[in-house]
Amino acid sequence: MELQDKTILLGVCGGVAAYKAAALLRDMRRAGARVRVVMTEAATRFITPLTLQALSGEAVYTGLWDERIANGMPHIELSRGIDAVLVVAATADFLARMATGRAEDLLSTIALARKTPLFVAPAMNRQMWEHPATRRNVATLLGDGVCFFGPASGVQACGDEGEGRMLEPEEILEALIAALTPRRLAGKKVLLTAGPTFEAIDPVRGLTNLSSGRMGYALARAAMQAGAEVSLVSGPVELAAPYGVRVSRVRSALEMREAVLQEATTADLFIAVAAVADYRAEEVATQKHKKENGRPPEIRLIANPDILAEVAALPRPPFCVGFAAESENLETFAEEKRKRKKIPLIVGNLIQEGFGGKTNRVILFDEEGSHPLPPGEKQAIAHKLIEHIAHLLEKTYARAG
Ligand code: PMT
Image 1 (cartoon, rainbow, N blue to C red):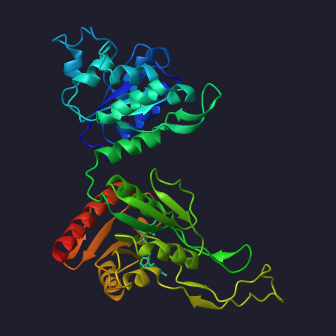
Image 2: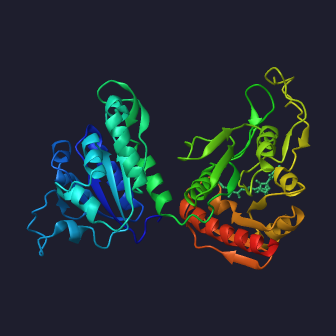
Image 3: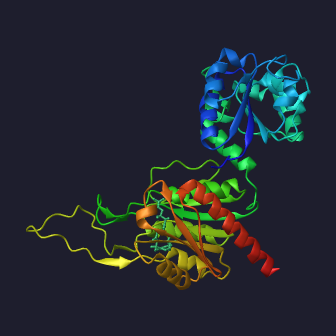
């Protein structure tokens, strides 16, 4: 879980978007975080403290004079032992108070008393966001090291359209995880492939496989959270683009190859997770195949190019990581693939454990031998894998001087 062992103080201000704090809080807890909630008085008009108490499993605080805190100093007590303060539905008024260092209520006092990073997800009408006073306050806060998540652009609760909308809860969570993850891939460009390819045989039929794209998308997300600039070339899957990741959608192996080769020469790391079809029809029928006298059509297949092997053979290749999905003899087949494709690392998984589902079990094969990772959710595996790859990359750079 990405926020395991983290304690976050979630501040909620008084804007319509405050209702989204409930979904965010639930997702933060699912990601493993302990969450302490502090609300402004105005926030309690949009969402009740009881809702957030039920979701956090802890008392919710709203006032500076709360008698539940034994030493009478809630702003100090609540800012102890936390890893970050995250303020959502942050209003123009709250930004103004923080920018001038005012400490009029519990949340603004904690914002001054904290020793940890402060993340802010603003939410306000576009004219308020664009007002010179708000611009000045945002500039001051950025200068003070406050980190902004959003706002986004779009239709607002008041009916206006423009910048000022709060990010969605899942986007805030991703930004929070990224901000708290060690930036081991900072400054690196990471290129990945994910999902299946679809090889047409006629206008409506084709050859494909059951890859869901989950493993590749999870790795793209983990690489972004580790500070990399991430580009993902994706076969046809239903998944949404991970926050902060550029996604190019392709269909066939040939399209995937073209998209990959456009970026491979400038990438530092290439991770080939896609289950690329080994073969395609030599000729794609322009009309739908028909039964001829009850006989099935004859479709001649030809081999697709091996994208990973091609990237690994570039004059100055990125650090290449392959995947091998096998139904048996994982160790032998994966290691044999690694050597044949001349790559430093291959990730082996059994199709019955990793193909299509949400969980996986992987073994890494590199020049030093094999390293099993604990089985689990693909996202958790992705984080461990990115750590391992970052370590190998650091060693490779150190060797090269
Ligand atoms: O998408 P999910 O449902 O989450 O499932 C994830 C996965 C099981 C698909 C993934 O973990 C995985 O194992 N992907 C590789 C599938 C595979 O067996 O690939 P392969 O053995 O055909 O190829 C070996 C490597 O070469 C892979 O890195 C592949 O991306 C790459 N390759 C293969 C053929 C080809 N023409 N071009 C390639 O780049």
